[in-house]
Image 1 (cartoon, rainbow, N blue to C red):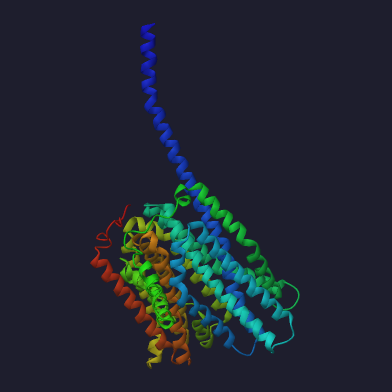
Image 2 (cartoon, one colour):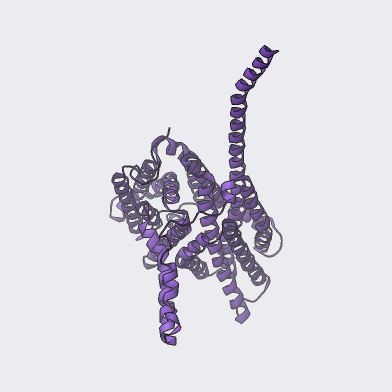
Length: 506
């Protein structure tokens, strides 16, 4: 009996580590499954939001043209208003996102986006169904359509800063490879919606009965009225599945917001100043609050690649309205133009698939540097024949056009690969408490430089001068590539950045 007891004890001792190991393995599997499910919930929520926003951005430009078919002025005005609002308010929106609880920030930004699109679509419907194209009520409705549509961009920006930047960083923790994969998946959703949502809107325009554009505008109104609740439910599900997302945001590092109370109190004057001095102090404090995110942006460790990313928006070498008009003036048929635009989007989607393995094999900073130089090489090859022809070289029209469109198509791979690398650098090097503000300034700077590119097209509107704008765009990309290369050399390809493991792991 004693021997049997000893055998039983031995079996129990042998089984104990095995049981403990199995529990650890089950726990790890559960955590991995929770991470994957939370990641899918984030992606689904992001898809619902992006689909409605991309569809409305496409619809509203055509709507302005439908209301005033003889002029592009209102299309241009809406674009400038949209970019100007993002440029002016991006930092403030990001700072607000930093101060709010995680779910509250994302859900309120979704609500702002959806409500503004719905308001813009509702007033646009009234304008489309009305016979009037002038009068006080008409111009008021047009103003509301444009203002609300532009304000929806702030909601989209805020949701991007919250969900695409902070939520993804929190979910992945310190797993750099997982963050690269999730960032690539979110960018793939962006690019897919950029193609598919306008296509779906166009099909509704073509086959819906009734007055022109009423069907598509009504469909987008319904989408944005109904999408907010599932968007938020999916975020709640992600929080339930991930303890990291359910936890409060980590506090700011010491000194991250040390000047905030001092700035707020600067305008009070202790209650003893005159009304004029109080107003002056309040204005000074407001200006300091607006400037603080820009100061945080300038001090971030990844300021150089972030500025390089912004410089890529100072360009006409994209599939924007200016390039579209130029290619049409050069004789490229609309069907071919649409085909090459689609190929450019496919090139970007391929970049999101290639980025995670490139990140594993090369590391984050080398991947970004290689991507931006690839983009520059493609753009130089595309713009070269047109610039040479503008300088007097005998280059045929076909060679100019097809070199340009293929250069643009291939450059999208480098562009979006570098976009992913630069944004992940910002995510991984900026403190949680400042991530929204820094990313908001990034969006503001990109919008500002994009406005300057459009203004350059206004100053030089002739197609004969357009190749020189293309050459200037290549110079901007070259400056961005030089910034990234200098950053890579200075940081040892990222190895000297504190607290950041950027070496290749494959």
